[in-house]
Amino acid sequence: MSQIRHLIYLHGFNSSAQSVKAQQAKQYFNQHFPELEFCCPQLLTQPRAAIAQIEEIISQLDGEWALIGSSLGGYFSSYFAEKYQKQAVLVNPAVKPYELLNDYLGEQVNPYTGERYLVESHFIADLKALEPKQVNEKQYFVLLQTADEVLDYTEAETRFAGSKMLVEQGGDHSFVGFDNKLPDIANFLQLT
Image (cartoon, rainbow, N blue to C red; front, side):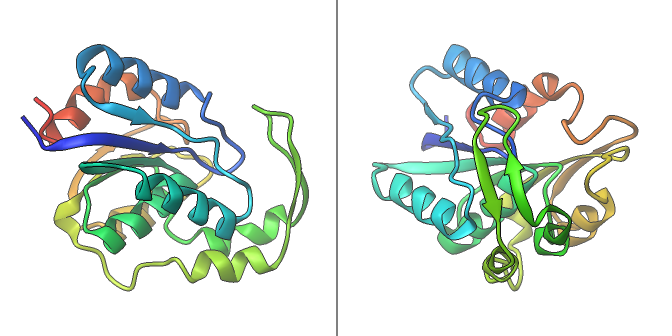
C-alpha cells in the first residue's frame, strides 16, 4: 500500500470541480480507497490566485500527497510535482498554455459555474513563469488521446517522453473513457 494519503485533482481552464472526469475520479477513489482524502477544488480563474489557492491546500495536508491534473490542471500539476517532488497523473495536459491564451483574452463565462471573468494579458506571463525548466519524468503518468481538439498531444508526448505514458488513438480533449483508466492511475500511484 502506498503512503499517499491525499489526492488533489486539478481541473482545466473553463472547467469545474463538477466536471465529468473530476466526479468520476472522486467516486472511484472514494469507493475503492476510502482512507484516501480526495480533494478537487474549484480553481480560481487567475493563474496567480489559483497557485496561491493550491499552495494553501497543500499547506494543510498531513502526509504524502499526489496530483491528477487535466488540461491546464495538468500544467499546474507539473509545476507542483516538480516543486515538491511528488507524483502526478496528467490527462491531456497543457504544455504551453501561455501560447494559447491570446485566443481567450477578454470576458469568459465558465459553462459549469456560470461565473463571468476576465482573461487579462498578464495571465500569459503568469503562466509562463510556472513552466518547469525540466521534468523528473519518473514522477508522471501521462494519458493522451490523439484526436484532442484543443491541444496538440505531441507536445505532451515530447515533453514527458521518458514518463509512463498511454497514448490512445482517437478520443478528444475530455479523454473519452477516462473512468476506465482509474485503476491504472491507482496502480501508478501504488494505491493497490
